[in-house]
Image (cartoon, rainbow, N blue to C red; front, side, top):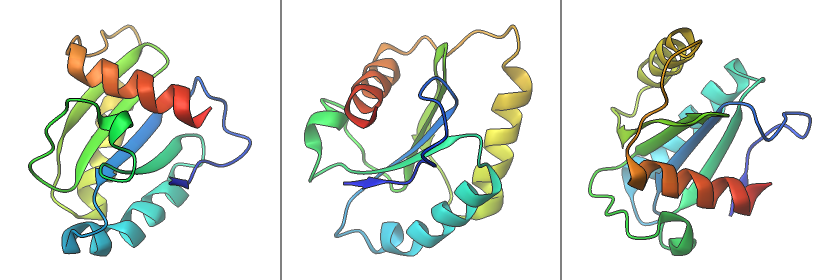
Length: 124
């Protein structure tokens, strides 16, 4: 279990959660990239979840492609899906979701919301 959130980031801020596995070489290569992007967004919580070591957090979600990223704000899950393992891709996605968020609807996918709820509860 790795908590990568800054200690002064409120629990109701944006969350960026990477769902990966220790055996996955792509995930191993992506971890420092994920940390670097976290440094660019200090007002957001970044969490790394190993879906095998912490399978209860993933629940019934079937992660087939790594890395899979969940992004949520105080209103709920806004994105859940695989990403190309590049810093610029994650940064652009975060920026576009953040810019669209004011007054926007959170994603209504119940599976994404359920994963977010479990991660948020476990990592508070």
